[in-house]
Length: 154
Image 1 (tube, rainbow, N blue to C red):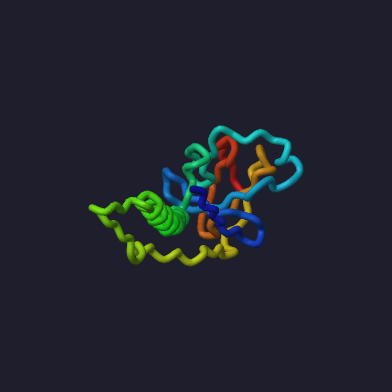
Image 2 (image 1 turned 135 degrees about the vertical axis):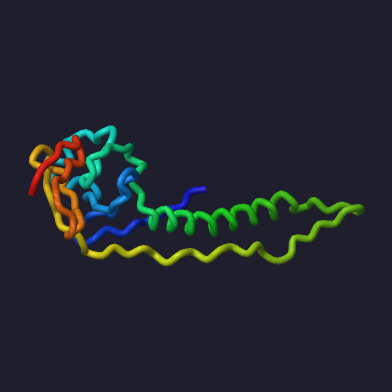
């Protein structure tokens, strides 16, 4: 079963992320930010621009994004299970046993689509300027490069 999820970007093309270490949110650019970025290999890990700690690519989901993904998966899984049960018991009746599948399994409602506000400010590391990030306006440096973790000031 494949479920397509679309996560919203802000108007500058940035996706909200959450550090698995400090649990603070920031944004990184979704897709290459420029031509130089297109030519670069993807790093094995990214670094939090706020605390500098590294984590693998699949570690940066926000709690809201995870809740949304679960909310989209449960109704689809419920429909898949219901159809599987109907298919499994189709023609299973005999003169001694009769199976009727009546009604439907109550599937949870699909959650409302996430929205992404145009908040935070763009900062660019001097070492990997092709990977800009957005940080909360209330935060103060030093910040860390998304690619290598090097600290820098703005």
